[in-house]
Image (cartoon, rainbow, N blue to C red; front, side, top):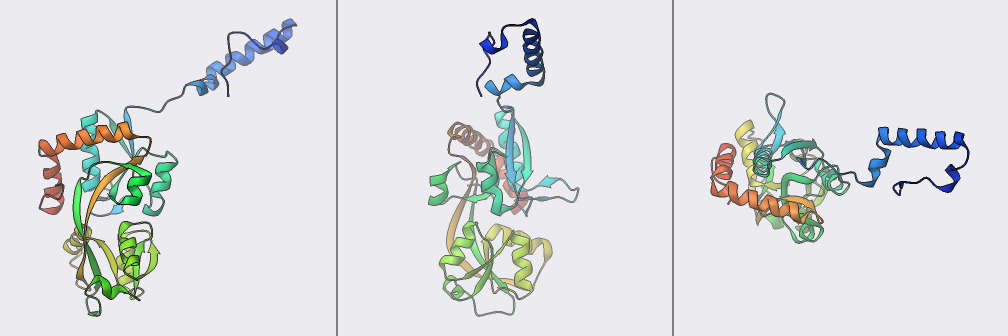
Length: 268
């Protein structure tokens, strides 16, 4: 769409009636903001963030119904450093990158594991979490103790997650689910043999529920680092976020948030 210049096209000139019609149309366009298509910009004072809201202790609904968690508080702290209001959009993990690409939000804050594929496709911040991969099975199943034992088994995983790839690469057939809660449900129901996930999420689940029907069968041997993810053309934003993370690390804020949720500093 091109912007109207100071003069109307020749076809509008001529009779007084046509001149009046043109004046009316132009006035309506100005009032309704149609001419704003020439220079519309989003609210630069708001940082829009996509997150699951179902992945405790990183992003979940608190007892008061409000969104909370480690990633939520870190994102809010980053927003404060940038002088921006933070606005969250809850999105299932398997569609969260599509939401980023379609510009529903500017950033993903949901334990995005840094890997070569994501580094090639997205602009990733410096890591703000470091964790290990763990294999979870039913407590009475002792056939799985290492990653190699997953070959020929079935694992419940979020299909686009890093842990799904770890399980798949080990030879486990993937039963796709939306998130951690569904993974555990399928495992306890005997519909799958195992699940692979973040040690911090597994530890928090065990601590909160006291569930003894599942057990940590072993470690994957993978150390993963998690970051914020933005679109490739948002290098400036990621640079600002990295500066904010450096400041939050230096002033002890990241350590404080980390210890609140995990009892130790996982932000290093």
